[in-house]
Length: 451
Image (cartoon, rainbow, N blue to C red; front, side):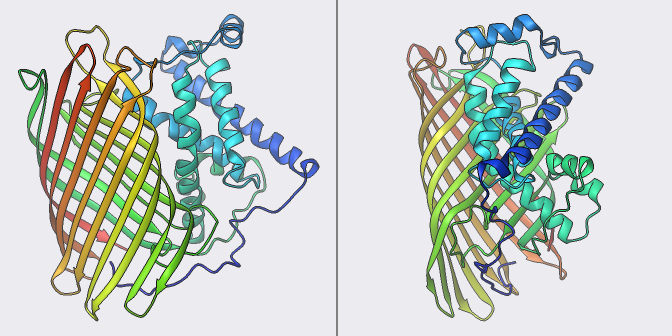
């Protein structure tokens, strides 16, 4: 709900500021974090070996090869595995450092340690540069979000076995040592769970629509959550992610269609130049991790495939129009330093992941009245130019446009009912390869539980 008691993060809340310590005092915690990272990688390799994956059997020869030969860009791995799996795996490396007392930026080292050791020593495949470049920066937002949610769950009295799933690295550290999570207090500003039913229309084609690659028209079930941690509008801090927003949803018609969405942003630093009775504004630099996979049902990828790890300048504004009506506008614009897409064509043997850089902008609008309900409109646009030499499609440009319009109204103190219209578009233009056109439309009705 928009209507909540406003509060300001006090700058003397020191639990999320690492203690200053010299190299000597950091050696033992660093070794413990490194050992936990190697343990995590070993557990992943063992699990993959049990699953029967032939690449999960590293050898002395494969390790020597990866340390003595140039690394390559791996373009034929599953999009979902690479762009969701690697940031998640990186979050475990990040949190191995976090629970041992290292700060947000210091954990870049542990992301590097975990990712490089995995690529060289815990699988027998040729080490992949793109996996490194997805894992390390992706570990920062994924790791800090999961760590703070773990502490939020601990403060709320969630049993340790359940909190484990929010941050397995923190749960493992707690199991192996006598570590007790710091008292972070309660910082959740907004939390919504929803369950819905939708009807999706997804189509993709090449050569300007002349040849259809995939088409689906049918129903699906959908579930997800949206949370806001910390007050979005009253933020003056240089501590990363004292405020962040995170949304995750999954829609599916088994074996035919799925819809996976992840959107997140967190302040790296921020200030609040406007704090009046009716007008509140925060602005600052944010780190984003966004993901979309919509269309054909497959464990590796979908039809519309989108990934963006970005640095944006952000402004978040709230105005109280009346005692019962509030408006929120949140805008982001900036640079995508690691983006990815997936190319499909019957003319090439492999379906290729493309990696690149680009620009993005996101706008979120909320208008809520206590009696009339809430109107939400979201619009996000991305453009990506492929990094040269990263695939057969290095000379190419991909555009995405995502929009959602939703209306919901409370039917009880915590439960709301709503409708949503969602649209997604992807256009790809590639040198020496056919262009692609993809679209997805899905209206939905849903019920939500609101904290």
